[in-house]
Length: 328
Image 1 (cartoon, rainbow, N blue to C red):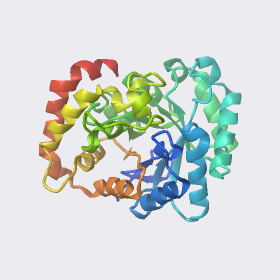
Image 2: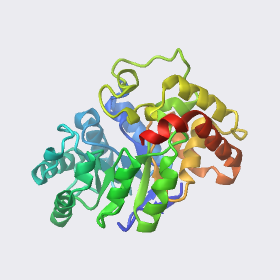
Image 3: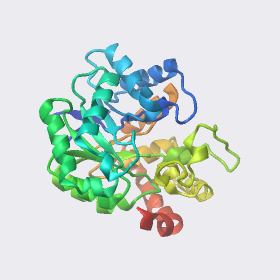
Image 4: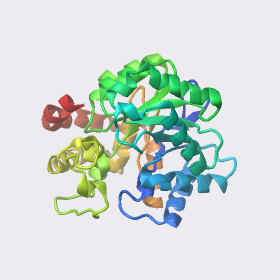
């Protein structure tokens, strides 16, 4: 697994990380034993970045990671958590006192004195644009509660605003074959500024798994059942905001351009990781097989993906750009 610098932190993180939203049981039930096995399989495969949030399972994901890391000293894993969704996403809730309370809770869940990296969890644009936000984050760094901070965003405009802040370590944004706008608008600017980029929702909530059909059903407590049109939270977090049936057709077209022996999810992850300016890709996993398969994508030679890369642009332009590009 290749490792890339995490901006100016002195840390390096794997090109394929692990997103742990699934371990919070917001994608259907995942037992504690299975969750710990996913974490172990990922580390064994070379993953050194876990991405989590204080609201994933109301802290369950953080606590499971804390349990795992306590049992594996010397793990060399960077944990990037997120905060800001424990209250309504309204600017007045993003206060210094709330930041302190949220980070203290995450420190307790993870069992650490200092959080490696805390990201604001898709806050309103007004929060990203406010000097007070970053004064409060700088204070947490000065106090030793957090080592570094970044911002998880929904739009390219929000990413650019965050990147302009000198203390920002990373931005986290949706990048996948169904969401190409950040390639042109965000990655070059982040690279020039020395800001790391985490590509989230890389498999479009499973649409790029190659396993789903029109008849696929999801559990009632799976956001792919209850948030397809943004009923519960940001629409872009579910299937990258792509209409499900349209996404199935697009995925089939991409699958027709795969190199021999490479699956659609592996090609998608490897393609994202090869984009200049991407630091790490953070797919989720509910099973050890998924975790190992995701990590293995980090060893695919980008030169083997030329046909697939061309298909990504073609399919996006023909099927998705008109609907997706203007939104984000």
